[in-house]
Length: 54
Image (cartoon, rainbow, N blue to C red; front, side, top):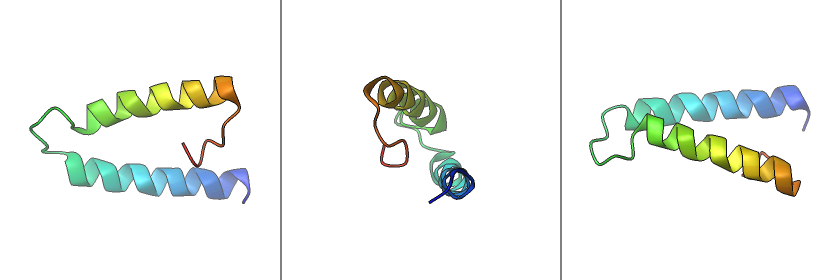
């Protein structure tokens, strides 16, 4: 899978998650997911993990 395909998968997933969790009231809303995702990406880069899996 090339970089463009990966970016498209991530973009579609992000849109789905935003739509699904936009009114989540337990604290696990889009912004929580966004923060966790950013932390996971940083850890993945440091560890050399596959970002698509993370």
